[in-house]
Length: 194
Length: 194
Image 1: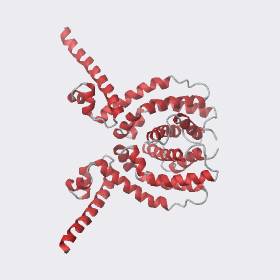
Image 2 (image 1 turned 90 degrees about the horizontal axis):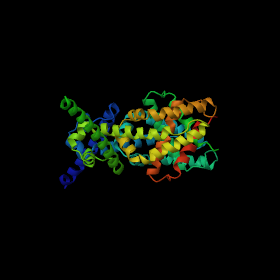
Image 3 (image 1 turned 180 degrees about the horizontal axis):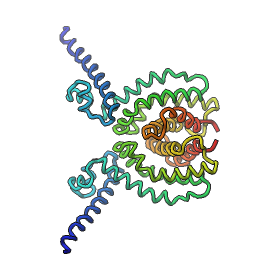
Image 4 (image 1 turned 90 degrees about the vertical axis):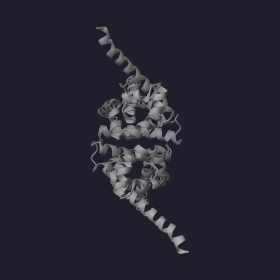
C-alpha cells in the first residue's frame, strides 16, 4: 500500500527540511540581533509561526537546538586538532580553534546566555569539555600541568577565560587580534606545573 | 497651603516605601526561584501588579534595580577590607569577601545573567572592578603582579574565575568550603609576576 506508507514518509522529510530551514534562519537572525523574535525567525525561514511553534514550542527550545547545532559544527573543527605531541602546544592549538568558534558565534552565545541555564549551557559543552579534559589529564601525567587542583576545575577556568575574552572583545577592551595568544598565556599561567 | 504641599510629599513617601517593598520582595522571590514572575513578586510585596509596573516597567528593569541594590549592599562589605599592606594578602581578603557575596547571591546572579546584557552586568560592577583595579595596579608597581597584560584583562579574569566558581559549586563539582582558597590560588597563578 504505497499511499499509506509514502504519506508519513513525505511528511517526515518535510519536517526534517523545515527544521533545517528554521535552524539556518535562526542563525542568520540571531547573528543580526541576539534578541531576534520567533516571528522574525519564522519570516526569515519563509514559514508560518504555527509551523515554527509546531517544531519548537518556545524560544528557549529553539535556542537550545541552535546552540546544539553550532556546537556540533564546531566539533568538526575541534576534532581536526592534533592532540598528540606536546600537551602545551596541543592545548594552544585547541584554544586558537575554540576562540575562532567563540568569536564567530558571539551573538548566538549572547542569546544562549539570556535564554538557557548555566547548567544546560555546561551540558551542551560536554563534548568539547571532554576533549580538553583528556588533554589536561595527559599534561598532568607528563608532569607539565599542575596536579594540585582537579581537572574539572582547570577545564572550567579555561572555559571562563575563553568566554570572558569574548566579553572583553565585545566591549572594546581587548583587540580581537590579541585575543587567542592572550587567552593561551593566561590559561597556561594557571595550568603550568609548579 | 499644607494640603497642596503635603499630598505630593505623602505620595512621594509612599512611592519610596513601595519601591523598598518591591525590592525586598524581589530578593525573597528570586532567591527562592531565579525565574520568579512579576505576579509572584507583586504578591510577595503585598501590592497590585499595576503598582509594581508603575515603578518597574518590565522584568529586566526590576532585575536591574535588584542587582544595583545587592551590589550597593556588597560595597559596604568590600569597602571594609583593608587594602593597604601586602597586595597579595589584600587581594586574597578581597576575594574571600567577594566570594561570600557571590555565594549568597547565586539565584540573583542567575536572574541577572538571564535578563541583563553582559555589558550592563559589567557596568553595574564598575565599583567593585575599580577597587580590584587599584589594588592590581599597586601590586604591579610593587613588582609582585605581572605587567605583561593590561590591568583590565587581569580584573576581567578575576571576575570570570569568581563567577565560574559559583557555577562549579551550583553543579556540585566544587565544595563551597574549598571555593575561596581555590579561587585565590587560581587568580594568583595568573597575577604573580613572572
